[in-house]
Length: 311
Image (cartoon, rainbow, N blue to C red; front, side, top):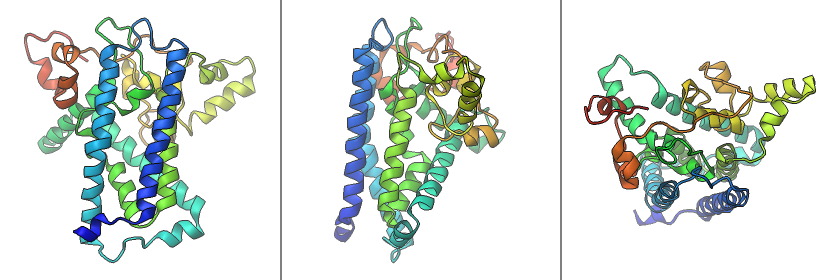
């Protein structure tokens, strides 16, 4: 056990560099939102700030370390002689390996995300699992107060229930790759996904993607629309956070090919969402700790007489 915690320097360096890049870019995106006035007039409430702080703090101090230890122990038990075994792969075929890593990671994330937004499955067991996923993901779609003025922001990228980061399969996949020696691939794949994910959550004052989608030049409009079939852009993800049917669309944060070709969930709009965020139950609206540690099973909550709102 003691040898396990003596992790290779490359593993520690990849993790610390990814964490530092996340902090720097989150600071830049958040500073932009504050300076440009995108956090005022109810767009971001005190509870939103508190929820972001709790989620990020818990992720950094508990969830991520726990998941890293768990995955590395499992990999050491199942593949004791394979630690660092794929270092040669990124050394000889870095770019193909990085692209493959990103595609697999984004597929796993998007598929789990889609599962959390889908209709209840017929299987009773799967239904229970899905209820847990739904409850774990629900805080990500709660922002602002009940006045419906709330809008998403860069820090909303990390807002989830306590369990969400522990049950995302792409997190397990990434850490397994790190154990196998894909240090540089893990670093650059993780950093690119995190930065792009924060970028699509940021509350931009100037919406460059909408400007291109509504450009006077036909080639520019069609070119941008074609790009939206490959990559997820801010307005696409903002519509995923809207209070509309589009909240079940655009499941990926980075690579939209899966939404387009596999799940039929690609939705490209030419204007901003009218209202952001799901309606909040009383307990959620009044307590950040309730959102983070309990949240809600939407089906169960709808059956409670005292709760009249629904998401």
